Image (cartoon, rainbow over all chains, first blue to last red; front, side, top):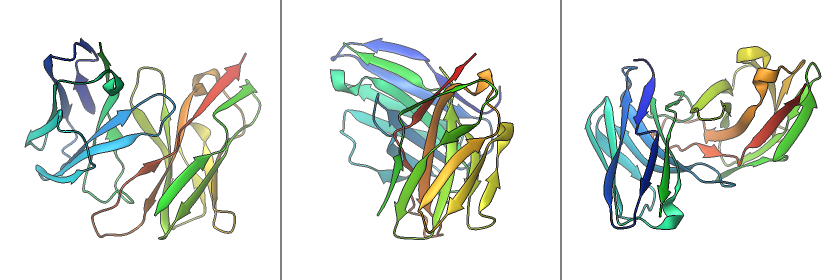
Length: 115
Length: 116
């Protein structure tokens, strides 16, 4: 397995469910990111972890809870979501947390549908 | 503050003809600029980036972009379109600094359709 992988690729959940998205990077990077991609809107940065510490939390509702147990894995725990949370959730990683310099490598995303 | 405007939400070109995807930016700092491509059901892939070196940047798959400071533009071009170029393209800006608090600001994307 190479690059950045995400599971599951598709997820349908009810508003009362609890689920988790998983991201794994096989590139030896030390920074990882969660983005939300909604139709007709720019990618929104949700969370950033650098060296397993959260360095960014862009006013994301508490129903989204990230976890970074080590530099290779990143989770996004979901609970009591709303239909407007339906989107493509993208994970990315980079070697170093300097957005202007370090290329970010993206996973294929998890397509989330909240009913 | 920084922002990106992709001037066309959808571009259609015939196979073998040139491609032009337009991007204008604003940034309070010297910018880094990127173009990413997203094929259906795939993640974003970096095409090319500008980080204050040569203003004409060559990327993968025959794409290139020119940084024009006076016009605050970073348009993406390719001399001859291939069917495999059909995808969504994102222009992205970030401050070029080492403070560790930079963010990528993404445009809303341009969907490129190639007509056989």
